[in-house]
Image 1: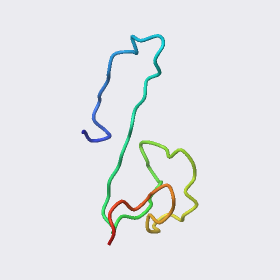
Image 2 (image 1 turned 90 degrees about the vertical axis):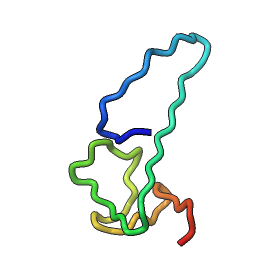
Image 3 (image 1 turned 30 degrees about the vertical axis):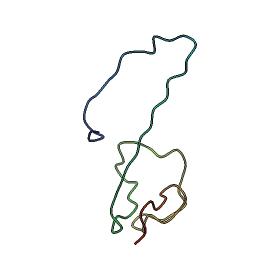
Length: 66
């Protein structure tokens, strides 16, 4: 695990017959809000919520009940 702004790297995929896979997971508290301004990593698609709104949509699933 590391902070998203830390410079990091890995060697290239040496296996011609295998695809490389990666997982990026972000966890936040229930008081977090959506702030796309100045984002260092774009989302895969627009979540359809306004800036400043709670993270309540399918792109931000709840993994632990309140």
